[in-house]
Length: 519
Image 1 (cartoon, helix red, strand yellow):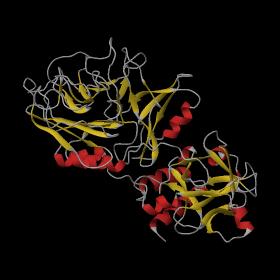
Image 2 (tube, rainbow, N blue to C red):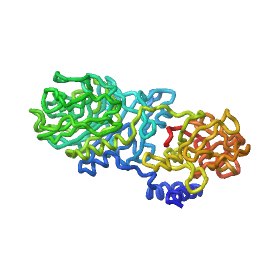
Image 3 (spheres, rainbow, N blue to C red):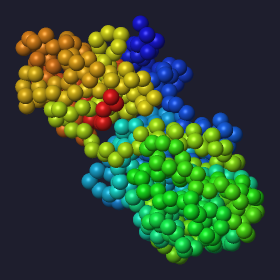
Image 4 (cartoon, rainbow, N blue to C red):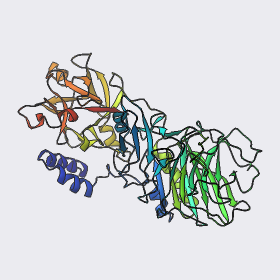
């Protein structure tokens, strides 16, 4: 028996015995299996390079492997209620389904992006109810993407949206201290308005002179004229101008970054040197546009240590942001990152799997899906077959899970073996074997061609009993639905003589989200 299988069996046994709390803080937290552990993420890479993150923001994923706290907050227009959106699992992708459920039937805005470093540099929209000012929070669901096969939302900024943070003890570099920054943005949503920035800005919302800012700009705005190409370009907003290189003249090494997903990087040692880099955030490495002396009049820098996103520094207390841009993730670091560190961060971003494939899979014959639990305990758990036996269970699956684990949690949707108006689920990595119940417990077995097997392997999809996703009704026991209980899968009724028929959490345990397949 493999270590993975032993841990899954131990987890099932403990939960079935009512030891959920003990397991959550003991076995799972203390001895995560390799399939649960996240790989190094951007801020882990920066720290290993000696340039730790002092601010880290994202609506799509955790930027530390050990981060499981909130990524961002949404506010509902119908009743002004708010909800924090966290990763599906520690170090993982945002739980977009939680946003969808909270915002169903109304609209939401993104009111804040939490600082994942713990330094308190949480970005809040610059408007009434936020930091104060004239702007508004951005709509929460304008753009959906996928990251590692999971749905996530972008912060889609239009003119009139902007975000700001200032914490005097937050650790953001000030004065002439060295600093690096990156963001993942989009080459398909940019304009020439001032100024789609992410980085270090003034604390007073005023243009306080050369070197008072140190922020990445990504736009089609050609500040000093003479630009070639349509843009958008990766530029440095270091106040009183957007610089493509070390002078006001357009840098001939600059290129328009028009990829759907773009990595933009700026680093500045504060006294003598800066560098600009960019690349396709889906694949490949970085292109260095400039590495050399700071522009005349900017050596040394005079950074103030606030953080801006979506606007210039002299915005937006009485004026409105004029820029447009998309923000998926970004971080600010203390120190001047090495080129090797920058390359490693870009490799991590490319491996994250940003994609525009946003369609939520439907349970229709021919589709390929994974089925995620919706109960609060288990929202990173997926229905899968167990490698050590033929049982069907739930367990965490993440981007760093093994190919076998991902395949075990992926299903081919087939017309129902007993009734073509219903469905059967064939294993994606065990062709010819289907999800079926026997003595009310779920197994993965090869189709033996009998009518009994066909009936046991047929499920009729219904609207989720908990109001979200799907519930799968047993074809030959219509009062019973596919349910997880103690991390094992059963068909269960809402009340009955078996332990798994308990009415407690029945609606949630029998509701499943169809997600993009892990394999």
